[in-house]
Length: 187
Ligand SMILES: [Zn+2]
Image 1: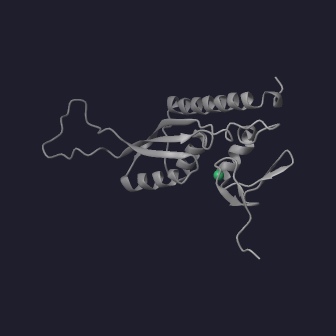
Image 2: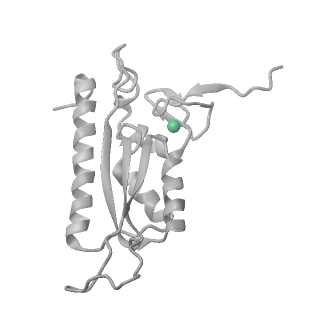
Image 3: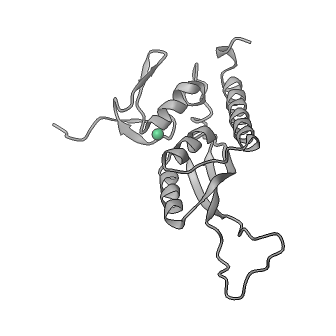
């Protein structure tokens, strides 16, 4: 008897995962996922990941939607907090790179730095994330940032900016999904 578990392919990130893990059913087939993140992506738009009538889905055809976005935080993070945040994001599926954006040094209107004043930045004011939109959306990335203690600006402009990005991403995914399986959607 083999003690190696029954492995299947996660259709979103294409990792080998245990059969039955984070399972979801779709049109009579069962799929397993490495994470709830991949399961959520699949259930939102399964046609991006599994083809219909022998036509490969975008993911199966090797499609990637690489995006690079800057997320500004409402409150700068100290180096240790920023390191924890970056580590958490790098563990997410679809995240290719995460870089820090230093917060600007805040000074009075006309003040020049005093002699000997350190020129270090005020902390980490944001991060720049490179990711594959087929595996991670900005909404998912922001949720993870909030879980590990990152806080976003509360200004209406910042909020609208984030909502707009979420909307744009959903439109892109919807366009790709409907071009992949035109007959599957009523128009
Ligand atoms: Zn996965």
